Image 1 (cartoon, helix red, strand yellow):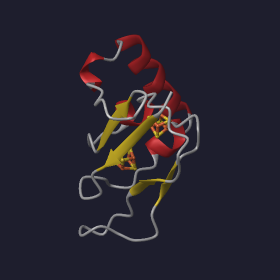
Image 2 (cartoon, helix red, strand yellow):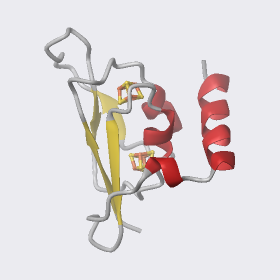
Image 3 (cartoon, protein in one colour):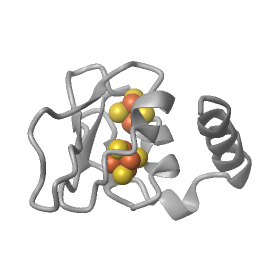
Image 4 (tube, helix red, strand yellow):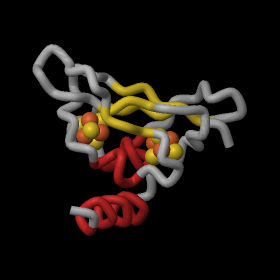
Length: 96
Ligand code: SF4
Ligand code: SF4
């Protein structure tokens, strides 16, 4: 399934949690800092499936996820199954 993310680079603090939980390795940390001096996450390629892992784990709510055949439907992260949210947050914790 096609997906895409939009990262608000001014909200991002470069914590790398989203990089850790992306199953398709399509997020990296930019070499260019934002106005606050953080190096923000950035999407690197077309392989996003819109799984929402990155947006669930982001402590700064800096990621929006879009998913459908054309990647244009915004996913409401509040509507994601809480069991999935727990699994993703545990995954991020274990990676520390
Ligand atoms: S929605 Fe899923 S596949 Fe897309 S960037 Fe986020 S974690 Fe990776
Ligand atoms: S989880 Fe959020 S704050 Fe952390 S690097 Fe990713 S987008 Fe930035």
